[in-house]
Each structure stands twice: as C-alpha cells, then as structure tokens.
Length: 111
Image (cartoon, helix red, strand yellow):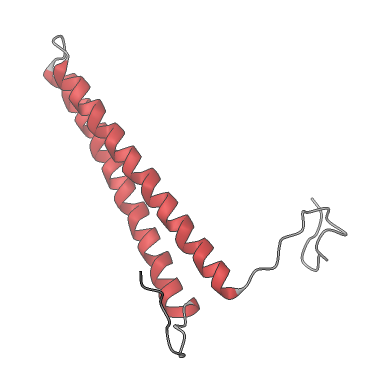
C-alpha cells in the first residue's frame, strides 16, 4: 500500500483530483448528504412496516415466527435510531463549527 501522508493530489498516489469548493458549498453538500441519509432511513423503516404487515397477513404464521419477525424489526429500528443520532451530531457539528450566518442585509425577491 502506498504511503499517502504527504501526497500531492493526483501525482504520486494516482488518486482523483478533488474539486475545490467554497465553505458555503461544503456546508450545502454536507446538509444535502444528511437529507439523503434521512430519506434512506425512512425507506428502511417503511420496508420494516411492510414486512410486519406481510407477516401478520400470513395464515400459517405461528407465534414463534411472528416474534422472530418482531425482533428483526426491533433490531432494525434500534439501528436506525443509532444512525439518527449520528446524523444529529453531524448536523450539530455543521451548525456549531461551519455555518456562519451572513452579517449583511438579507435581500429577498417577493412575487
């Protein structure tokens, strides 16, 4: 594995060049990534809900199997809750360290 500690971008390690972006764009990109992750987590929870509905509609499902499905859904909800905490910390980091509201007059266009 190549040593990339003092790597000049795109020269010695062959890694792709990263575009230079402004702080404002970096904050927007970070917040967009949080929003996309939140959307993905909501889809996961929706899938768990559909799985529970499907299990409940099965006639041959016994109590033991139903409890297994419930445990699986519970574990997924706990995993999603943990990821939500990570996203909350990421958002708080942005708000506390990267976002500086403009001090000038805010102009808006109204229709």
